Length: 53
Image (cartoon, rainbow, N blue to C red):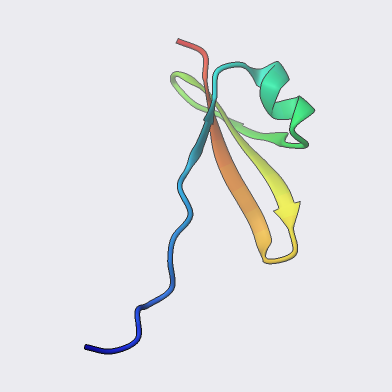
């Protein structure tokens, strides 16, 4: 066949906001179930979810 396209990384879901903050993320927005957090990487912003349910 041919070359494979770019691979997409999985979405990280933290179980607590404290875990996300310890991992270097910062709060970006609030969601119905928790928070949307982000961290800066060499390739741009990396997003993750915090599920507080």
